[in-house]
Length: 102
Ligand SMILES: [Zn+2]
Image (cartoon, rainbow, N blue to C red; front, side):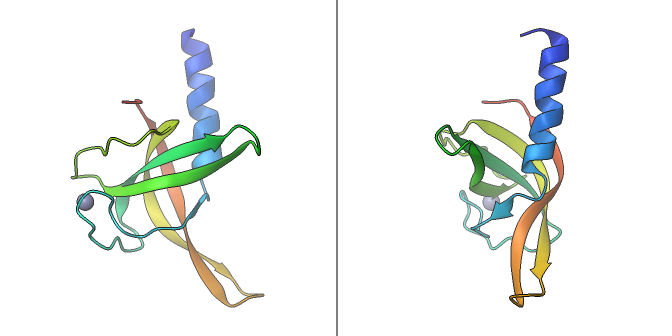
């Protein structure tokens, strides 16, 4: 991979992961409940059939990276997204920074 291709991949990964819905709110390693605004590490998987990305695991930044078969790893902050029409809130990722894959 050339350097410019790597930069492009990193830029699109940031776009992909920003706003991605998080179904879990516990660290996969220490099982601590993660609050909104917490800096986290998220491991993402890409479904090649649906071409959708999903958050596979979340963890605190201080925990060692979990050995999960992930397609990408990002550092991010947890945020709450509100859906006024259904009066629900969901967790999502913001301030995403791609991390080196393990
Ligand atoms: Zn943890």
